[in-house]
Length: 115
Image (tube, rainbow, N blue to C red; front, side, top):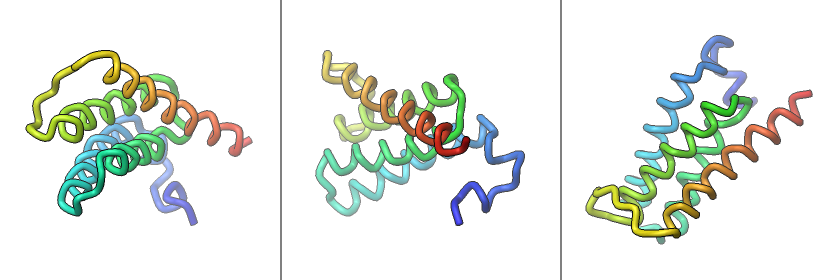
């Protein structure tokens, strides 16, 4: 049974719910990763999994917003543990692109599998 089968039909595709889940899921991933001492790459991967999960069967606005939310948490709390959002160069833009690709791949794969 998937998570989508557990949610009521109106909530499954609700953009607000998905972005709420992206925000709080990313926060949980950051906090658990920091508390358990996971390496930075593992914490980034955890946030990417959250971004991918909330992007399933969503349109471009939700997918891009979820990618930006994940990037904000990664940049503000994983790369800069002080919680200050600073874009330090092209690496941060590559990270944003990476989150966007993960989110888009999740929604594309789910659309193809749903047919």
